[in-house]
Image 1 (cartoon, rainbow, N blue to C red):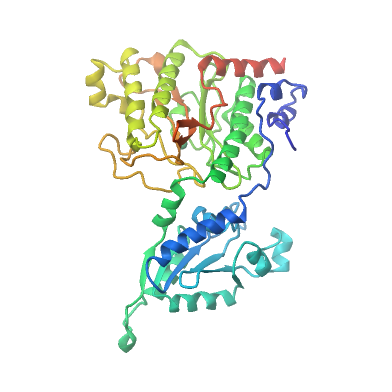
Image 2: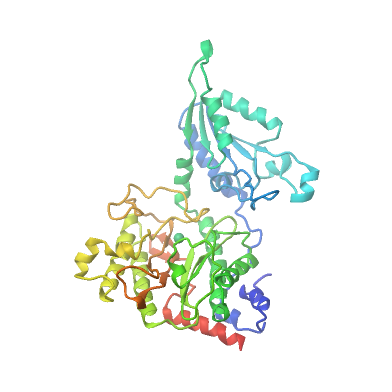
Length: 483
Ligand SMILES: [Mn+2]
């Protein structure tokens, strides 16, 4: 799979000639990243940083981190298992049932893991077991059911429990009961234990990306760019949104994405106005725009890219006018992603361009300044435009107190090493009141992944074209391959 241009597999699936110029069009086409993971060192450093914070809380502090519980799908089925991001950040462990115990006094890391089970492993492959846990950096490893005792003894001994558990409710109750037993304790009551929510601590650690994390995000972005290109190149002969989604999903999977960063949004025409459009299975009407917000995940790191292009390779006058406003707004927003600028500045900048553009096109009436203050633009752009990205697509971390300008904008000053998206849009669904029919059924969003650096914003997804003419050329180029 080395250096195989991503779209080739799709090309053969669709019966396109394999001697296509796809590789030539993407000179930086990524290698495949199957099975790629960050090194053990990364997770060990994260544990050490967390242990230092736990130690500073005082003697007797125990950090307890819980893995993602398995999720049923239906009947005998389970959803693909994807580790909890906080737990992954601290351990690199991909298994369910795992619990990490960090003893701040001793500085030790104990990993509780599911027992080896030859029968189950016949179905789902080898489990870590004790040897695997040690190989992942654990000082001590204990399998269930003995692990239950290890956990209860550790909880009993601790004076302070720092709990990192995002999704396992039963486990949370177990820890809570150990720290604050239910009912009266009688003569044994001491109430000396305390429970600390460790999630904000880990969230804060995750806000500033380490260089190896940025590299992994870049790989997810690179694979996702190929997915977008495949979808654009195929769109001239796609008749259903499902084919658009499949083009991206097949491509990122072929490049090493085991998971999507989020469920693919592929909406044609008015469906592009549904912000988290869930179905992506409707026919594509000729002349409509296709909005695709989709990405794959590489080594547990996400990407988040949106492009909007004309299904047939040519923007109509109205589509093009709105597209250019969104593109200009995106550029204005990107320019605000700099160290020291508050998070909300990018929202303000992008919204201002959208508002002015809609006034110029006659979609918002009156004076630009007045119209912006009135906030009429919010009807056309009803969402925030920038969020952190990392192990989660809406990554952990605080944006500071909410900016009075917009509920999805914070006041926290940005810093080098943050990775954020920039994703303004204009949405005019069919039937939108007070808007001429010629503008209706148009949904546009443009989204890229931006690294904040000391030298300013760096667009990690810049390789995927954004200019209207470039998108038209890609779609038309794809159409030619069919003839
Ligand atoms: Mn996004």
